[in-house]
Length: 405
Ligand code: F0G
Image 1 (cartoon, rainbow, N blue to C red):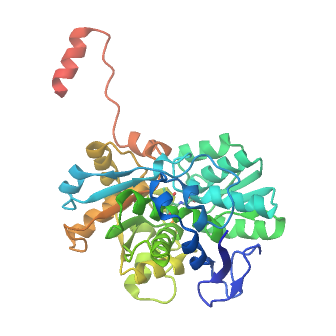
Image 2 (image 1 turned 120 degrees about the vertical axis):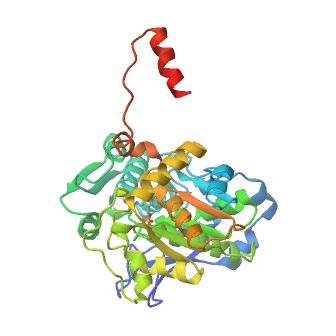
Image 3 (image 1 turned 180 degrees about the vertical axis):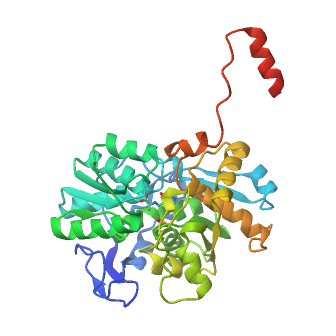
């Protein structure tokens, strides 16, 4: 392990990587720092280039030894020529994170986070979640033989994600409040009850998620110009940016992409903060959107998010629920990729960015499709009605087909 220390992103205070600490005395979150010179010296570039991507291919850049895995990472980077041409962004790629073991990018973080929990000797883990984090943590906890507690906003979690948390045997605790409140509750529970917290306030979990950047670099053979990411709690956009910064740090590239965050109009605190040019977070007290995964008004990683956006020369934009649902449908119909609404926000955002002249035609753009569409089928079945049944009679069957040809 080349991990050196934890550093506060606000005041620079340092902690040991063996401390169980999620925030600095100043209240800000921590980041993991490595000995990059050591990594550089030990990196076997030939072997690195030949090995197919998975999360643990990049173990040198990770803070814990592999202890629990479900075969995460190695998701396809799909060129989307037809869709790209429709959107005037011909060099468009989708990184399909829905192909992870539990159907979202969270698995990259949980393989590392739960491995760290085992290393530290914990027997219990917990999180608050809009759905995917809980599904992923529940699976990795089951695989590791740990007890798992998940705190969910009651009635606001997509059916597939809830089913996952239940079948993996997590203790599901619905709370009559939104995600932001659930998160403050679980933070207190973990402090008091000796349970390891695996929300994105945990610096080690985000380390796993930065492998999205490593894989994109490996699969594309270079750094893309622009990355478009849906933003909820703001951990993932930071993690991906950090991954690219580390590739530069160890001399594998000189480039870092522009990071663009996309939020739903009804849950857009990061966009509001950027527009206001504010040094404090512009909280959205009652977040609301069809994209329940990113229904967050008080993103804990806001400082990290703003750093990734500002330092990479990026931006953040809002899209309406309607734009999200149309992007979800287009991606499925034109490219055969079915994503959940939050993931479609990145594509809806790209469409808007091209329209506004913010993304140019010659740019290589990667949209991160964060989670699988099957997690939230009711969003589709409530919009597209099922056709009337046809009697088992060939004349009737042909009549139906002819009207559709
Ligand atoms: N996309 C999906 C499908 C998500 O589930 C999430 C976050 C995001 C995007 C945003 O990522 O929070 O790092 O900015 N879901 C969390 C959860 C909050 O509990 O599953 P972020």
